[in-house]
Length: 237
Image 1 (tube, rainbow, N blue to C red):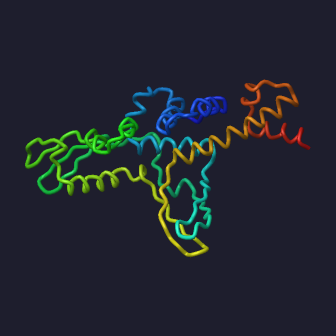
Image 2: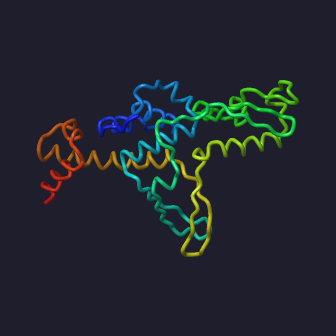
Image 3: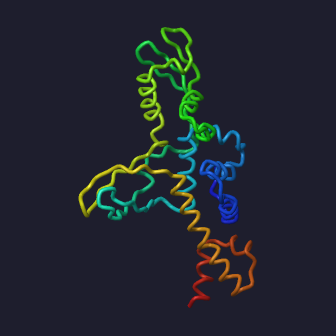
């Protein structure tokens, strides 16, 4: 996997309009992981997908994560700042198990983690059913429909423990009313917001430089950020 060029990122951003978030994620990773087919990427677990998105975000925008959230109690805006190291992202390349065992009471279950194809389903029961590879009660095969709700809930908790980076929560504190709460963090939503802001900024820079020097968009995008900034400072001085 590798970082994306400015041209590639701008192309992904443009084609991403109207696409579901899942498709955006897979499109980004398909370009960054040139050896992986789109169908393969969609079968990566959500955790593996998100780990790779974390690395792409780090390569393109740095290690600092800054965002805001509104306090659910008083609606005060709270700014939070984290470093990528605080997310405990494992190193690349990833060497993760794809199948897991879970046992409780009389049940033994072989399962995998949800992937992007699963999340395209609207039926949460179907998502779970897809992830269950083998189910036995007292060593006799049964269907997912035969699992008691208590076992389903225990399995859900176990799956969350198995893939903690697919469901990240951030603890926040409001300085105005001292309220404390947990906020879910989605790396894809965060990254795509940054890509959107970056694209609007870079297009404005292309406009300024093309008007000033009559350079093509391709030539401007192929410049390093530092070199582009020097030229912008020249025309804005």
